[in-house]
Length: 166
Image (tube, rainbow, N blue to C red; front, side):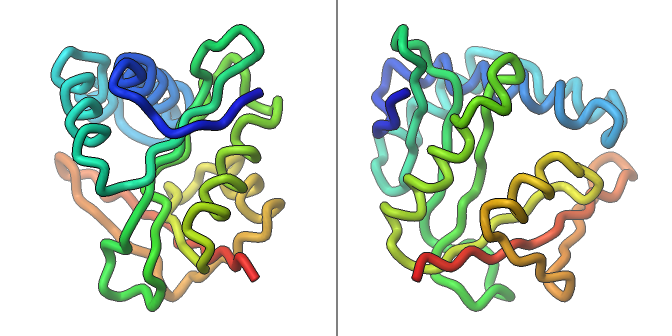
């Protein structure tokens, strides 16, 4: 297993994993019409290329022994003014076919090393496997920071987790 910074050529793999994992993880939590908007596309690949090019965020990829990208972590400066921490992990996704094999742990730990400061993330409420994963890795649930977003008359609730690097 190898963790490294994302390169432009990784954008395709990142976009694919992002969409596949959404479909897999949220199938019973989010209405299908919302999931349909999260399909793989050339526009998604272009968005990831632009993020990588900008180099303003931390974008890490995990590779298996064959050099195939199996997951990614994306984070940077905090985006939520209600959270009193400077850094946020925006996304952590591992391909469904290799979940439970240590890639997510390695990405999370590597991100923590890169920011070298306490950080937070939001996880979809009801995603019990993600919540268990974050708690197992030292995440502290902060129910007072739960947030909600509306998408096509459906309310998405997200739980906030704090991580300490000290």
